[in-house]
Length: 105
Length: 153
Image (cartoon, one colour):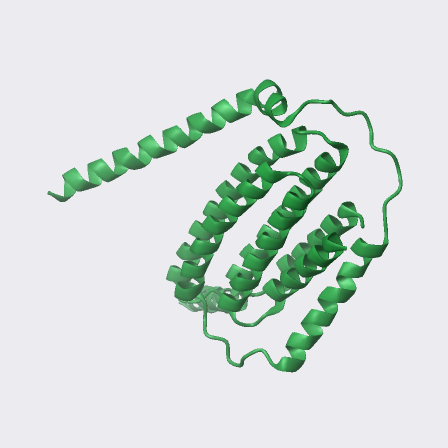
């Protein structure tokens, strides 16, 4: 059982989800998985060595993670209200149509 | 053995959170991911980390449930049992390397600091500054709300 590989698998899953998902909430979930992978690496390595420093660093990591989550959710709400959808492909299509209309006029 | 089961559950729930079609079910699977992570911390003796994980996870999930319900588009079709089985199988396969492989190599030098020492002696400045930032945010929100209320009269 190796926690480094466990966190590596979680990181890979998060990055894959970040690159492939079209729903903004799924992108947010991917970011959460990446953050969870990083914290697992910190805490498990520290606790397996018997060091308290990993848990202390975790507080900083969690506060950063929470701030990032708040910013992402705020952006998500703004984008969803503006475009009426949280699908990235629909948002891109809407922007393209808007720019084409502006170019014609 | 219990660590392997928890790792398996962690990877499977992460797969479900990423690839399920319904956002609400994805958030529920993310709750499972946070729960398995916290249990892993408890079993490895990192109880403080488990408590923080639990607290942050509950807050994140509450907001995600609300925003997921409000903002997400309704999926055209529900997740089929075949896809669910494929996701579970993928999760099991992805958890096998973590269970059976290991990274060799000794750990480097590290300090013998306990959690309390590490928190207050090594990260004391961070903790105080974070408290200052949170206090500033709280005061700012209070001022904005106060101005808004006065402006509304």
